[in-house]
Length: 431
Image 1 (cartoon, helix red, strand yellow):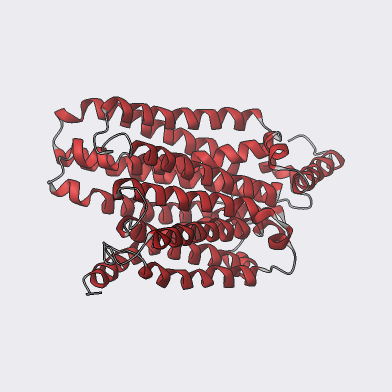
Image 2: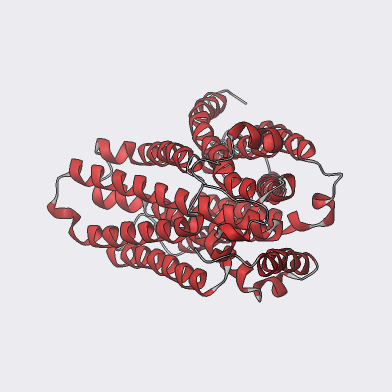
């Protein structure tokens, strides 16, 4: 092995810090002109895009593939969510124990996504020749591989972002929020055109191809940029050794990140109650039908989520006074928003006894719920890098934080079933 020039290594090491400082003082437009930041932003979009593709195609699978009334149609969404969250938790735990090759994981996960959605593109053209049980099993396998691919890319991306600095972690968070806003806007627009259940094969095929294009664009920009260089062992000044034997212990990471990872976990547990209320709270006074109002609420929530991630870089949230413990208290305080949802028109409980003011207050509540979700998530991830003392720890933290992220999603999805029961029971009470 060629000897390492420690002077050159030190200079390249500090280049990351200099670039990070420039981004702190720059506008969002200036950030987008930074190739590394743009790369992390696009990675964030690519992380959430496959999940949105599965969600957006749910009605197509239930209606066209499983014919609405079959058992496969009825259990499709719940099974898809269970397979996705459980496989994500398990795979994230496996990845976090193998603290090496982070740069390779980014592209490998994206290639898995391209394979999955390429096969799904073929599936929508030929599914009619197979039995329903085979189609169901095939889709669940695709969901599992896609979930693992996303976990692999996110594991590698957050490890590299932690090395580059908090601004780049925010770039990943912003990309995910953008990927959340775009499909919800499309769904809202479609609600004015016709029944979203009547999705054409050509439209679904194009959507899956778009997912492949997003992954390919991400791989291209990633390889063009210098982001992956942060994974070179020689950049870790004063850190040498075998990554297999010198792995950072989970106990070390938890001691330094406990309030941040608990914030991430708590935020997702609370947030996954949102779809239950969004899908069961109906319009009262606004000139919209429920088929338009519900997609509009999803759009409002996602816009709030995007804005919350955008403001997370503000000095108030990044100052030393806004500690990880404060962030954890912030995440827990969001629980207080949940009872407020029962004040509105759950399953037409209020009927005509309320006015348009009720709708506007509910829209504001959903925006705040989305804003606090994005804000806590982004602030938590941005504070990970400064809380650690070495790049080896920062890389390992990429997988460690993802365990709590995926666990929060899994626990939140289970809690949402109980929330459905509570909402149903509450709606049956007389006003």
